[in-house]
Length: 445
Ligand code: IMO
Ligand code: MG
Image 1 (cartoon, rainbow, N blue to C red):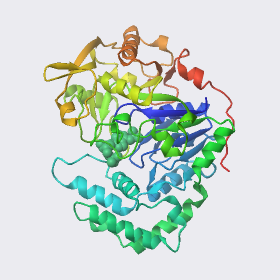
Image 2: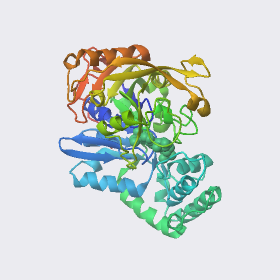
Image 3: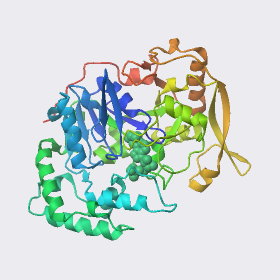
């Protein structure tokens, strides 16, 4: 066992950061394979809270190497801020962070384009994070994007930035606001300066990862976003612009599929979604508000209130299939402590017919009515529980019912944001795959 993927199994914000943080104790390297500053992980270590956007959650462990892979789009200004904040908190960033020389860059024009599109009225709105992530991936696929390696091209950068600016402007539906449309000279100068500061971190990370794997290191591939936000497999077009599912780990890091030995899915004990798009189990009512309050469901990147609803087994089953998840981590479990009844969506009803698979068409999905199985609530505080046996019977029944409707083991249950508020079931796959060990220490070369 050497390469693992941790993947979001709903619409993002499943608490991947905490699960990755927990597992980093058992691995040598944590590598991010997709997304960009749209990701937001809040990690609590004791009293300290860290909000990470580009940098993998493993950075808080002293001897874990963190990699930002080629599949990630990087906003260098915002990445440097993360680096500075971590450094100020005494974290060993210099030694433990490497960024792919092939990762694409977000430029101000990308943000301007994202903002202009999202600001327009009409149904086309995705509800993006407005950080330029989608347009940066468009530039990548359009083959006029800039990459980390271009930051070393003193002579040619100005021209490359100018060419990119022209392409982004011509593709933008509306004019870019002036603050997001600076002169290419100014952008080139600023990005050269960013490049100089980032030089110590830039590396051929695919080679680095493959060599470390050859040496026996364990690599955890950290997904951003979630399966339902995947460009191909999510609720298109209400998705992000990269491959957030497990397959993305191979292209986004330069690893062969043969390198991946297991996939761990992370999902909440209920559902949330930020931005637009279909969400069959949404509770746009008092119940939803109560989940939002108890779960502190506000975006860590944009601060937006998240849409909240009940657990959707169709989404979970789909995610288990697409990613071949063999072990699930169930998060924010204690948020459900106070409810009298807890519904689980086990099927949809569409035009009088019961369906148990996700339709591809978002308009059809919008018309689907959830069919609920209702379980009694446990009405007991579970916050901070560390052993499965310590959960009340009805809470254990809820977990058992989820396992059977989803068809996958729930090996980890998170009962608080803190590291120790976690149940790792001893009979679960995690203990077989990643037993607590003294890892082979993999320092960056
Ligand atoms: P983490 O890693 C939740 C959503 C946005 C929007 C859609 C497209 O924290 O789980 P984008 O800016 O990516 O073009 O927006 O995707 N979205 C996320 N929602 N968590 C995330 O990341 C997200 N990243 C993007 O809200 O609906
Ligand atoms: Mg998020």
